[in-house]
Length: 187
Image (cartoon, rainbow, N blue to C red; front, side, top):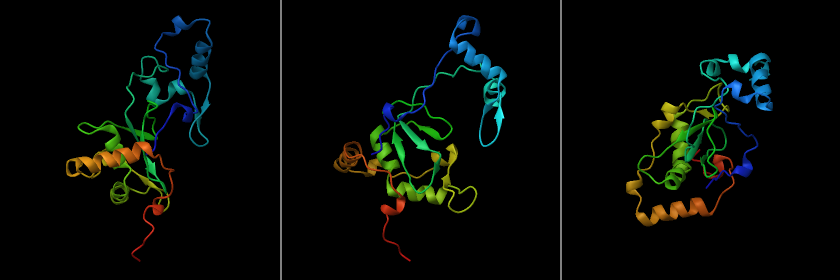
């Protein structure tokens, strides 16, 4: 299994829902003012004033994150040579590189184990798209991820499900290229 812990998170988020008037004489207010007046580097060579970015300027308080509960599983948006889905024990919030996965009628660790299976990786290959051509990885929208075929857990005998879950949570594996798991080729 692939488990994410707090030690692996290198960035922190300061969550505040207070008005600027309530933050007088704080370093946080100085940071908010900078975000309303100075350009910050964005993607590529672009830079812009954060408070004026479309995703932020529509908020009542541009700097306030809406409340969200962390999802138990995180799906990576672009899968390249390594195909993996994370069991989110660190309770991290997904950003634009990850999608929340919230199983409805399935145990979180069993669902994550199934999403990390080789057959699911092959379904992603068949259903995803490769932006920019060959070698760019497989990118999937949230709608495409929702449509991924998954082994029916009802078809997995209880003992096999327990083995699958146990192996997933007990024996974390390194994340290597998918071809390691499928070394034999037909052609």
